[in-house]
Image 1 (cartoon, chains in turn orange, cyan):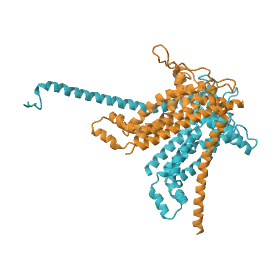
Image 2 (cartoon, helix red, strand yellow; image 1 turned 120 degrees about the vertical axis):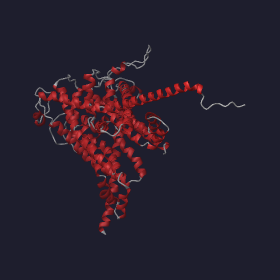
Image 3 (tube, one colour; image 1 turned 180 degrees about the horizontal axis):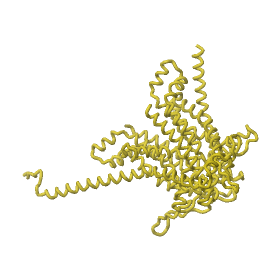
Image 4 (cartoon, chains in turn cyan, orange; image 1 turned 180 degrees about the vertical axis):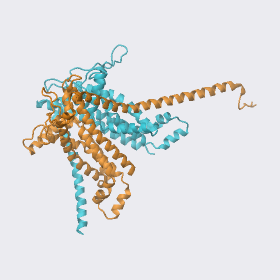
Length: 298
Length: 319
């Protein structure tokens, strides 16, 4: 009898332990957001968003940092999205099970676990010194693209796998070719899952600092890259690809590592901007997933 | 007066022939297009192999050059790491010790928290609680690491200093604790998936024998989901080893050989960041040290990543 009661007590105690465990993690997250908001909000003004960094903490801003981050993310998105989706489509729809696809699969699983700073080392040796691209926006964008590529491939494959085979069989039965089936049926049906994965992968890339530090990102940039649009023909310019850049995480790191406390407030404000961006992207991913799940009923 | 239209107007025979010719032409075109698309997709899939080849090739190449100047025995036995000083020592031990200590602290936090959370969400909580809590906890892994670094240095360390007066401003303890919180979602959501994959009849059988929720979870569910939980642990360890910004910001950047978590120390990742902040000439021995450190880091995580992959595969087979 006492054994029975002991079991019931243990059962009840664990329910409380579980709640405490979740509480610890959630409270840490809330404390982190609160700490940043309290320290950083005093710096928020239009001046902060539209000024260059400065030796004087009150005058310093994040203009070059957010412009740099946006351009780097543009390169990352333009590279990682098509490459990742193409690779995932190949592995799910085309590749037959053989040693090559096995190798690619193990390789992707392993790449997903390689520390981000190792990607930075590869980019330093390859892009910066072999290809002589320097510490440019192009180098940074490609580095982050390679970093999130495994994540994009894995989530896209999972999304494609949720499309039932009957959809493909129906398309084939009507004489559609493989590519027509993939392009007109499989991809549209898995769009929700693919988009969710893409948004989360890009939100990871935005917050990455380690690989950008390794390729030699500058921490004090008081100029903007060349504008991508220009007045004369051909109106589009790609000179910005080769420009040096600042980035929000690097700027934040730089301000944290200054000894003056005044700069720590700037770090908190820049960190808060970064945090809001990544949390907003994650919220967007959750809504996209929920919306598509509601619309699709097999 | 209906004029009968012949089913096959022979006068159009020639036209029909060209039609069927263009149809086979179109079919060939379509076949060529399909072939080209498949090859392009294959190329995209091969990019991942190229990335691995690039990483391994570069790390090995620079390390080989490094080991021509430094003996491999010194590298593993020397207890000092001062590659940029006049009196240069190249002993990786202090950096490895820093990485091991911060990883160990992180795991002391993340393994219990992650496992308990997973058991709770999978076996105790109502589905509605799970639906809210899971994405919320996953936000923990979405926070940029540089923000975690700020949190460790300027929030956690001051708090710890109230408990342990005399704790230095840079220490491995606060960095390790924060990394631990950061990897909780990796461990909890993968373990939870593994537990949910256990078939319902296992649970029903256990409850039918009069077991409590707690007994069911720990005697029936966890043993069945063991390889999935182990995979989660192993991948969490790999994450903690490779974490960079938190340790670079909060643990200090002095490569001292110490196992005491309240002391400042440098991890392998932090060393790479420290060197990258300076301006080392390409091809110098200092430049090669970050690739050697990177190789060590890559090999350590590789072991865990491959183990995790094998465990996950095994889970899929048993489930």
